[in-house]
Image 1 (cartoon, helix red, strand yellow):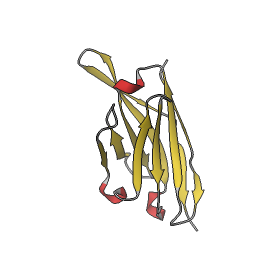
Image 2 (cartoon, one colour):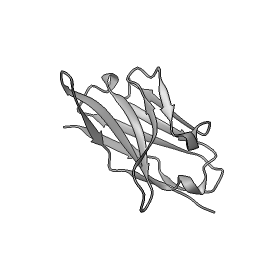
Image 3 (cartoon, rainbow, N blue to C red):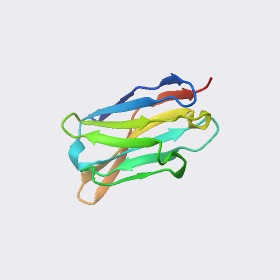
Image 4 (spheres, rainbow, N blue to C red):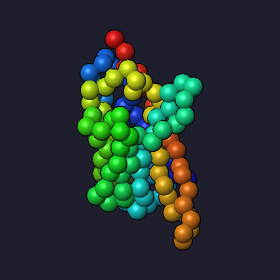
Length: 121
């Protein structure tokens, strides 16, 4: 059974930092690309950051470049999102995503339950 469990969200003042974690189980983590998405009320779910299976390549939403860092620890089956210099517009529910090979040539997206990040003074 695939599980993705996020933690680390909360309320933070503008300019502050948070570190999100996502612990996964039920699939081969080290073979899967991992991502963080976010969804603000009334808006679409956006890709925030993605990291390849080995961690050698990352990409980011333009508005978070230079402030957010995605990383992974394949020994701990965990992916992280370090968020610095947070802004009110970063307020959203953040979701962990796994892109998992379920059969040769076939992939499926799995999602965590989400963690709320609120940036406000």
